[in-house]
Amino acid sequence: MSASAVSPMTRVRYWIADRWVMTSALLVLAYLALPVVYTLVFSFNNYTKSNIAWNPVGSPTLKHWLDPCGPPGICEALVTSLQVGAVSTLVATVLGTMIAFALVRHDFIGRGPTNLLVFVPMATPEIVLGASLLTIFVQGFPSFQLGFFSIVIAHIMFCVSFVVVTVKARLQSLDPRMEEAAADLYADSRSAFVRVTLPLVLPGIVSAAMLSFSLSFDDFIITNFVSGDVSTFPKFVYVSYLRGIPAQANVIGFSLFLIAVLLTIGGQVVGNLRTKKG
Amino acid sequence: MAWLVMFFVVPMVQLFLVSLQSDYPGFPGYYYQDVNVANYARALTDFAPHFGRSMLFAGLATFFAFVLGYPLAYAMAFKAGRWRGVMMICVIAPFFTSFILRTIAWRQILSDEGWIASTLNAINLLPGGRITETWVAVVAGLTYNFLPFMVLPIYSSLERANPTVIEAGGDLYANGFTTFRTVTLPMSLPGVLAGTLLTFIPAAGDYVNAELLGSDVSTKMVGNVIESQFFRVLGGFPDAAALSFTLMALILALVFAYTRKFGTEELL
Image 1 (cartoon, rainbow over the protein chains, first blue to last red):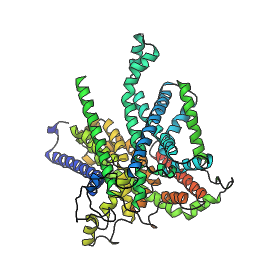
Image 2: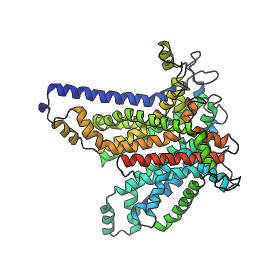
Image 3: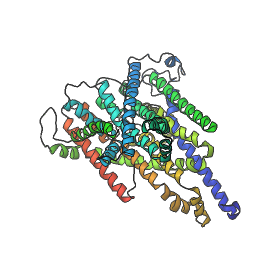
Image 4: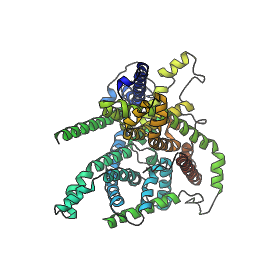
């Protein structure tokens, strides 16, 4: 719209509206960031009993940062979480990608129901998924020991859906002419897939894998139901809440946050450089 | 290839079918197999307040998430310009800290000794004297935890909207509010729909916020009951299963009614 067509009054109103929206957006972003800031601040807290109230005596202190594995069990839980995340991400990404290909490229019997089945776990409250998985593990396979593998199975189950949706979206937006061009250039279907389709879908697969790793790593509700005695990092934090959470949990939590943010920014910068070059 | 996938899909299908069935009450596992409707009756009568609270808290959290999330998504889509990527990272970044840790951070923020509660207390604006252990804290926590699920779908549907259409509203002498109401809002409706579902469903089943931010009695949600029936009550399995199943049915019914009312948008 041309500026001359708008009366000064309207322009003032637009100016206010502009600032109003931006200001409230920034406030909401601050609201989102506040707990992360608190997590960082309280990792320097020199608390005595529980790390809920700030103790001005002796704070800030670096002692928790110097001894991240101090409280018993915390690093074991972290390692378990990383292992579970790695295994379930790998399996869920492979399975989910194949399902996505099948759903987009092949018209098989039961395609509609499969679509629905992929969607249902995402629309179900986690607590229902956790409860139903627990009942299968306990009642269906009484000899099966709850622990690492039951966590992995549960995580694969809910991660697959997210992988399928992400990869499917990418596949559907692909230009079919690319593959046709490969076929025109005498590529057999195998090499067309490896050299054309896969590289084009790869960004979708990578972001699906990242998504499922973070979902798996951060999951608490389902894990809590199926984990038996094994502790993951979120479960460790939750369980120790009753006794008072060690500030080392904040140290580890914030470090992971920092690593993830740096990776994301790094990925974006690399992506930008690449698109500029190309 | 399709064949290969079918071999993976079939066990998955099987797993889901079993997982859905085993929820069924009167399936008390160790005990005996029966069609015990009393589980349902008990679930509905004894725990009706918890269901009510779950729906109420989740509804409130969804509403507040919408009120807070819409301006943010709008700003990201139309006003942010080159800051869009940065804002996007700011929305997603909190996810990188553990969900439990962030909820506990709210406990610290809202605690009796914290500056919010003490300020409100100092000017006598806090009737009960505290924020944690009340429903306010639980709803605040739920709103916070699921806010990004509201922002991202709204953002993506606004981003797809054509800004010239909105400008056309202004050219047609509609004032800012009318343009927003008749043009912008309807265009973002699919995003709002997806966002409210993505916020409401996990919020209704959540028990972490109620456990960490709420009190023992007056803020318990249905998730807390399911959790404690499973882990702390001996022989609570059938009741808990009936509760989970009822929760799921309730949510599906609400979702169905909701999508019916606001148009059957393809969600996938």
